Image (tube, rainbow, N blue to C red; front, top):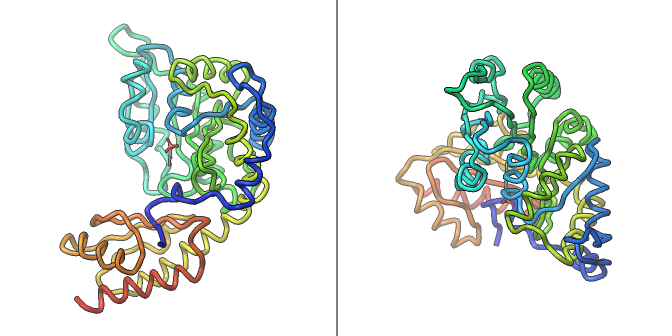
Length: 337
Ligand SMILES: *Cc1c(COP(=O)(O)O)cnc(C)c1O
């Protein structure tokens, strides 16, 4: 099967499994797990932050970060397609008693800082306190420009806001820009980084930030049920991935580009080639093709999520040869319409 639904579908490699099997472990709720500690320290160091905290998922890491930044009833400003606003089942409201304030993304995945400024509430009992703004990088595969990140973090400081980065795929951004990840992450108050996406781990996200904030997030993680015991088995996969799976993200980006270049030629497919920056591409098809196309591809052992706006994601388990097969299968479908 060539599975293009997400980069979360990767299988841990034999070498990653060997690293997991050999992991030194301890009870991480007591802070005793040497592999977890090593992973947290390593990511903190790489990102230019003080401390790290291992989580079972990115959803929980983002939520714990929001709960660490904001008190009950406080507000965070976030993109209206931002993961913590749209795809985390409203957890910030359900479990954190936090108030989200959504803003439309600009075409390049940034938030317009003038729009954000207009949404910061004055100190008035009618309004929640605005405490935090949240960016995402990559955002739908788009890389936020470094100059923008600098402007956004300065903006946040100027307005007395904290700034969190949902960096689920921040290593894709760093590889694409050809800069150490620290260049992207060091000025944020916190950054959430998924190991289970392009980096190919079975489980895990690390939240990095200031020591004091991470201590608060650790309490939130306990509340959310995310304190794990011999979690070093999982952290070992993360350590392995940081060593072996970061540079190779460039292959996923090249494969996405190649796939896009093949698909854009096909009559019946709308695709903006210039928007394909990392390991994701989006294309549009007519509604009548949504289900039959997915069926056709499935018969060719290719999995996609059916729809009129398709997201295809390349990853560790999609090779350059697979990309050729996918293009051929799409051509086969549209040739017969
Ligand atoms: C996947 C993802 C998350 C959440 O990660 P899970 O581990 O699936 O909970 C958060 N933010 C972004 C941008 C993501 O893509």
